[in-house]
Image (cartoon, rainbow, N blue to C red; front, side, top):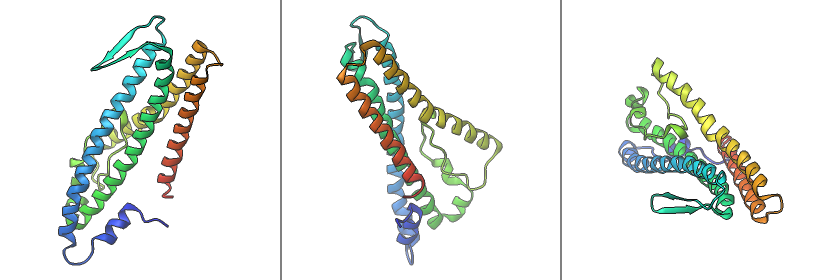
Length: 217
């Protein structure tokens, strides 16, 4: 059976000098962890921006062009049909990054247990956890049993936002998007069905990947 991240850390840093080695490696882990957080922030913003753009385009009956920074989207059928698939891919990639974020977080916790056990027991690693957007909240790394009432409240709010924004909203968007596209372009549009198939495939891959990660497969 594959080792967990925590077990790999414990097996890798033992004996004389383990504390120094763990501290040095934790700096690399934290840098990667911070980079993933920045990527997730951009991805979360992009997901909801693309959703808004799709809703604007699909409800327009003229060839309106929408500018996003240096990019310009023309209200053509091919753009409307492709947007839900692009959203599905960004969501898939965001879940992939989320799993990596959680792995790095677990690795950082285990490393601090080795070279700074007292600080870890008091939950000080929580204070330097890289920030994540509330639109894509995948949870805190843990408080070490030192939660205050406000922390528990925010953990509950974060859980609600997480399930809404990471699960309910994407499913609802994709469902209504393809319902609207079929209404607008009909059942005989091959490009629409190709994109629908890709979207479903990305959704299935995302669910399977998260499930396998959750159960340590």
